[in-house]
Length: 254
Ligand code: MF3
Ligand code: CO
Image (cartoon, rainbow, N blue to C red; front, side):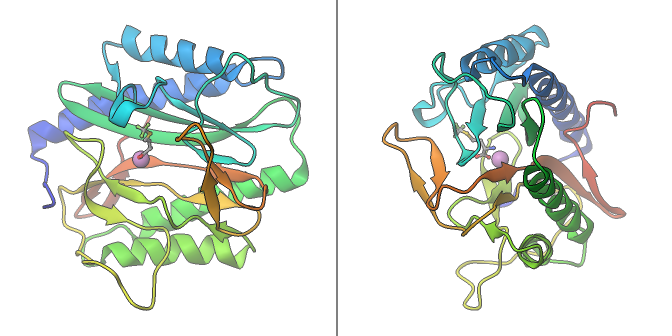
């Protein structure tokens, strides 16, 4: 069931989105060679709490971190570790959830430690462009699959793999609500393909691999990595569907 949000609920989503976006930006400022992924997790968790919110991911299905910190071939759900020190040129995806007044903001971005190579910058740029294409397609009259197709086309035409096992989602009082928001379309559609309606709040989150789309999960039970060891980037925002199109709720200023 898709829960449309009232004006009062959207205000709470904005508050959650603002804190999540500020925490994402703060996390990005911590990404430097020599810093541990644990430090990024701990400090970003502190930032969220200092803003009066709760880190949404902590204890979600038993997840042990405040946020997710995923390096290079790690796609998503990387767990901060004191032993993992960032090296020059590493790409670091930080996924942040903040809950306040009972509503969730969910967003992610991929940052570079030190100096990036050309290929890394292109991967990150195309991942953001894939999100932007999805955002532009997120308007009333269109369906979820229009978002999916726009994301997929942008990433695949640049030669990248689009992760299939993990997808975007509705977001609101719960981190994961209906509808599912895949980053790809299938010839034989599995599920419903709802029309976009004002008041829907969804997370659009392309996870884009330099190589194939295939993944595996590490023995920690959480960290999702590319099967071929190629690097991966992640970009995510929580957005609101309005009559005029989609509006990003995980924005630092609004
Ligand atoms: N942005 C991710 C998602 O939408 C974060 C979930 S991490 C978890 O699913 F640890 F909470 F599962
Ligand atoms: Co999400």
